[in-house]
Amino acid sequence: MAAKRFLNGSDPEEPPEKRTRTRPSFASVIGEAVMVNSFQNFFSALEPLLRRVVNEEVQRGVSKYNPCRSLTRSSSLRIQALEPSSLKLIFSQKLSLPIFTGSKITDVENNPLQIVVVDTRSNGLIAPASLPQPIKIELVVLDGDFPPGDRDHWTPEEFESNIVKERTGKRPLLTGDVNVTARDGVAPIGDIEFTDNSSWIRSRKFRIGAKVARGSYQGVRICEAITDAFVVKDHRGELYKKHHPPMLEDEVWRLEKIGKDGAFHKKLSAAGIKTVQDFLKLSIVEPQRLRKILGPGMSEKMWEVTMQHARKCVMGNKLYIFRGHNCIILLNPICQVVRAVINNQTLISRIR
Image (cartoon, rainbow, N blue to C red):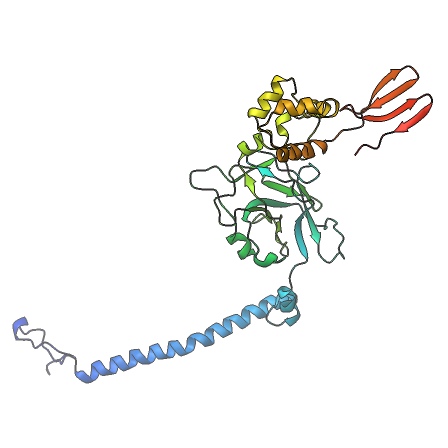
């Protein structure tokens, strides 16, 4: 019986040490390498084709159920997406200045701030825009130099990059009702205040900005609102602030050139002159006595500055009546004669 031949040319009956180890030939190695390289080239060439086929099938499926969603075929929709939004947030009034740390921020009419969503295509009319749902609005602090050149438009990225955060170890820069909701296009703001002054940033000024909170609105972009730039001063400065114009009931040191607890303030207090009304009364009735109380330390120039400030005081409508024999005299709160009736003849004073 013929001996059985094996493919590898070895006899299994031979001892292991007598078997010859088979080594691959150089030609077979080169052949395998060429085959692997060919497969790699084949798959590299096939990949773009597969991507294009898959993309076309996805687009075909989308357009089959909703033709308007096919953005690659609708040039009009692409153009519309590039058009800027006409919706914008605005502050309904300017801020009341100056602003101090720890003090409530109000508008120029001393009312709480209010944000309005407007449509800039409304021909200059500031009317709330109609929105399908309430939106969340967030108040932030901005650098006073933003936007450069006082532009009235910017990108969301520019707005975000100019938000000012608190200094290390400090409380949040703006506190209070900083997250509000706009309903029917209007968002009233409660109490907000600054916790730090603006002297530590390069511009020395802040702005308050308002933006739509992330995730609260899915429609077209609503442009952010910003206030005018302003300085924020430390609250201790407000304690010594002069009032413009002064009020009758203001303490007398609220007048220019009269410092709180200073020499002039102490002299006036010792003479019983506590308020601006007291000061003005004496300046009408006994001006020389008032000048003597203040003494030589107050120069003529300082005296003029103080008196000019005092004369701007708000008098109100209150009048005082003095009745005598055949006369009636009407006086204002600082003893100036407003009107006199003497022997049935009326005299009207021209008070400056």
